[in-house]
Each structure stands twice: as structure tokens, then as C-alpha cells.
Length: 110
Picture (spheres, rainbow, N blue to C red):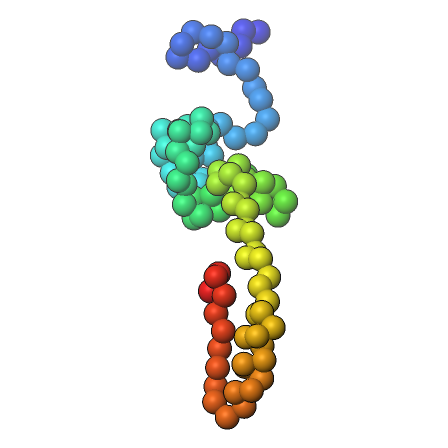
């Protein structure tokens, strides 16, 4: 028995899972948009689109998180904490002597 052929004349091979067209339809996006996402040409997919893809693919929480990481890239590192500053002994004595008024000392880093 001969296999059915695609429009290009090549034999169709049955594979498990969704075709691009089916996934795009389930996620509510166009096939061309999904292909651009798949190829990494769209780095600004919204959270809603990524969530729709995750739902259509029935991803686990861990797989969903991985999808978002792939789409967004790793989260930027937190900026380093400013160095700890201490007031010089003379400034501390001056503050200690100012018991009747409010006072604040600002350092180089705010």
C-alpha cells in the first residue's frame, strides 16, 4: 500500500504530536508568527502568547518555566549591593552630641 503524498510530492510520514498549523490554531496565533517564534526571530512574544502555547502543548509547570526562559533568556543578574559605609569617629561623636534635633548622614552611595 502506497503512502499518501504531500503537495510537494514527498511521502507523508505519520508522527506523534501536533503539526505547526494545529499548534498555532490551538494557541490562537498565525502559523507564520508561530514559525518565527520557533526559529527565534521573535524575541518579544507576550506572556499571553507563551501561556497559550504552554496550554496547547499541555506543558508541566517545569516545562512551562523552561519555555518562558527560552523565550526571554536568563533573568538579568541583580545589581551588586553598594559597599557598606561607616561614619568616621568624629561624625559619630557629632551625631551623638545632637540629642535634641534630628540628623542624618549620607554617604557617597546615597
